[in-house]
Amino acid sequence: MSSKEIKHILFPTDFSVCSAKALDVAMEIADKTRATISILYIIEPVFEYAAEAEDIHQFMDKTAKENFKKMKSDREKSRFKNLKVSTSIRDGNVITSILREAKERGADFIVMGSIGATGFKKVLFGSTAMEVMRQSPVPVLVVPDSDKKPDFKHFLFTTNFRERDPQNLAFSKKLAEEFNAKLTVLHIVKTMDFKSEVLRRGFIDYIKDTIQLNKLTFVLYEHEDITEGISSFIQEKPVSVIIMNRYKKSVLDLILESDKTQRVISYDQIPLLVIP
Image (tube, rainbow, N blue to C red; front, side):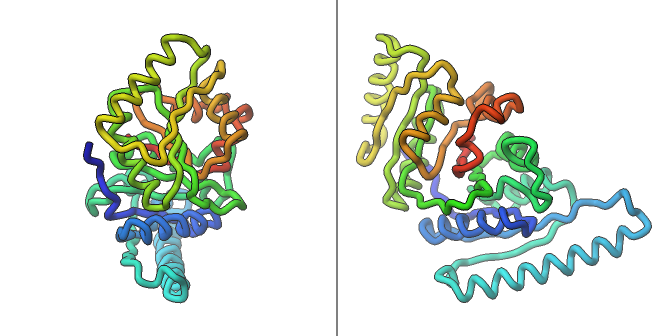
């Protein structure tokens, strides 16, 4: 089974602390996959202060260019100095602009921070990150505002045995191999029974016929609640990246529900990769 390669990463930024951490991750991935990076800053229309709108726009444009200049200077002093990086400034709605930019530039992977410059964190992820995860036609990696730097040693692929899962698993396997990382496939079941074991074995047999299984572990984990089950598993066996498949009524939608926020403790600490 073939899987897409990461050749062009789109990185939307608002120059926040969280965004700076996410940029480090984007450059790490670009370095491993030999991808180019497009860094995007979006200036949203100012309506509240119409009289000063042009002055505000000019200030934001100037500030963005100064930040881009500093980014370039810092990168040239780092081990990422040879990466191919471009920058752009766009006007418009943030979510719409990100999705349009990804399409126009042919980006096949998006990396972004989970929290914006305001630090607003009423929900599990910022509203921009949530909507990009839900709408993007390409994989999206959301990096949390965590003091712990991702080490990319253990990728966790969550599955509910859906049709696109093998293809997305092949993509995840290729990415994990770039980092020489372990890849675990996890399925949450309410009860360990004959049916769940048959499904697991059938999925494994199918994968054996499509992708190689080196450094791949399949786990059935018993828990009443899927989202809390994944969180509980992570507490027992720490992982570097959580990978989720996006489809209607997926686990992603469950963890993004506001009433889950206080109950689930892992998703705002570990990078989350969502594959459509």
